[in-house]
Length: 190
Image (cartoon, rainbow, N blue to C red; front, side, top):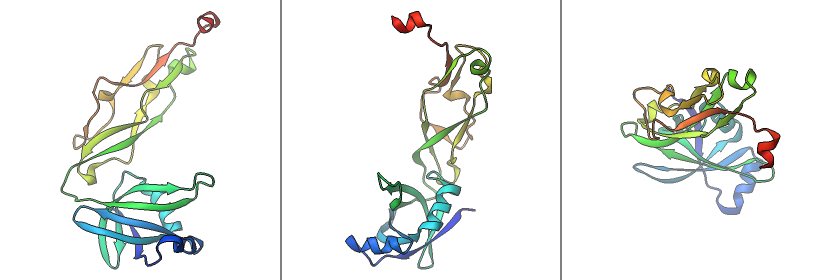
């Protein structure tokens, strides 16, 4: 069951949204499949909770005037200096239509090749593009680096733990992580 986030139709537009933010609300836009663009507002506290629990790759139910919209938190605009959330876009999806989205990779564990052989862990990707029905899209994909035991050990896209309902749109032989040897002083000088 998707998490719910309440929203109200927004009447304050343009410069008036400053007052909205002072009240602890965030101006937002709702758009997507089969709906007209709608100006809404959400509680900053509730939005932070939704971002923490669902992230930007999990479906949440946005409730506006009693109507539920299955949405992704599509774009969070932040103040470049304070990092405060300025506005957010909610993208409404059809639950019966496959979509493409980038899912973050989360590296877990400790690589023996780094700890025991003094290698360097090189991460080639931080996210991968997948195609799936909205309900099947993972919030993140874990990459277990405990298998990287030696210098030259690699993990390819094909080794990632992905559900059979999710199609990865990256070449299966592409290397996600590898252990490389540290350079000697002579190699660095060259």
